[in-house]
Image (cartoon, rainbow, N blue to C red; front, side):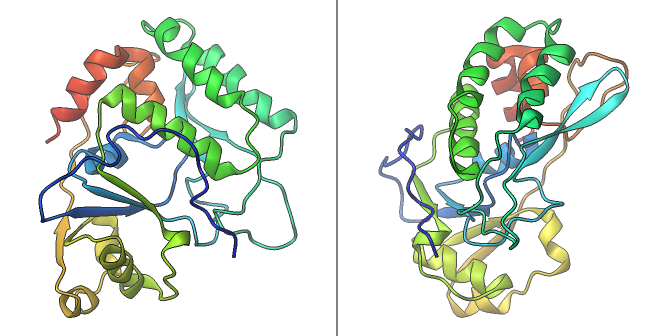
Length: 249
């Protein structure tokens, strides 16, 4: 297995000393994720990037949704086909013509948004870095969004460097313990398959995210929630986006 933690970006706030109780979040490195992703990171001391699992074709690591006059639409990072389902830390970007459509779609549907000139140039710069691995592109975009949201995270870990071979709830408990966490903050979607026992055995506390999506001014008709965070930034700008996200706490 290749090592996923080889990323030379600069995480905002990484390495800052904190208190003894440490809240950990585990999440795949999604592509321009929705606001619920960042809502959890506002309460996080340790962010464990889940990159040693398989990349799902129907997941969110290589795609997310934007808003158009016709409603929501996927924007997708094309991934090289190898014949085998790749691990997230190994998946490579396919720079075919479909990759260029991402910028065209963003420009077509957000060029008249109030804060397009503030947001688009730095976003374009990251998209044009020609990273080999999907995870490196996503982490560059994530770092940009964390800075815009003014989210400071004490510690970042890659699951692929922690040597955990268990699965499901046991894997999550093992990852939190290996990263030095004491509280596991999980999204509500995990309740259907979550098991308490592995966390109890490890002396870990489980907390559940309580997120209610904020409503903000969008283009193109009625409000649509759970779009990529880029929709908020284009429509509301950096300063207002920070306030809107924190209004959910």
